[in-house]
Image (cartoon, rainbow, N blue to C red):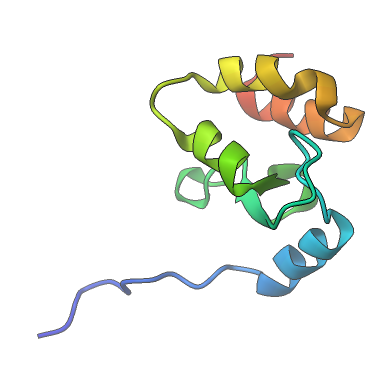
Length: 99
């Protein structure tokens, strides 16, 4: 008997995520030139979209810290705000509803 739901959900718009990664080749939080992952600021499960304003390119370390349980996302933002571009800071502020 199969699962009532797919085990792995495909990205809604893989092409949009691919182009976003190409345009942002460095981590938008710390500026590291390590391999980046495209992260949703508001998760798809909570209604987040694959639009640019909801995506941020993070390296694995920054991504782990964003999703980690030892810090709040506000603390994460305070740590990386100084190294982020203004565009990335604004996207995170909107996602965290910081005004």
